[in-house]
Length: 183
Image (cartoon, rainbow, N blue to C red; front, side):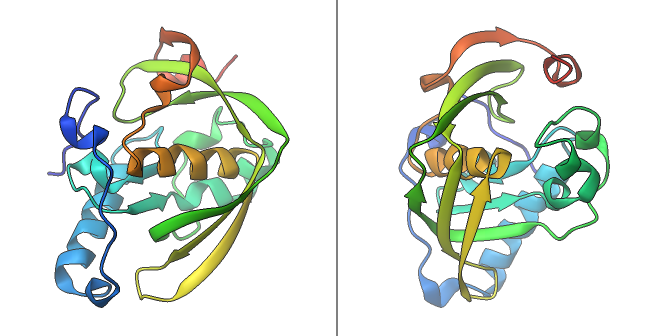
């Protein structure tokens, strides 16, 4: 069983190390990514996870395919209801991600974290973000994100830099996820 580490674990405050490109596709890295996917899919309200959240200080994050599902998208990035459905799209793996561009336009959205249970708060982040990374096969790609996806890119990149959303959030409070996103 893969454990998601919680906020008091020092690995979450480390700056994660870059993955050597020669290691992409190797069994050890495949196992780390598989463990991340298992941990993410084991949390009904999770939309993404970074390697430090499973105790591995490497620059990798995975975005759940469920945020690309049509009914989730129709909710304009709302997590209510659609979050608890099984993904129909493939999870996206980002190795050595770099945010290349952020919009000047920012929006305050409610945010939580699988490593900071059961706390939520509002974080102001850019509404558009462009990330460059490598996939699990070592292919370099660029992905644009708008709304919730842009928010996720920034949240997960923060994890890789040892930053938790609670460092930036306002209106911190504890709530079960099904209550938080009914607001």
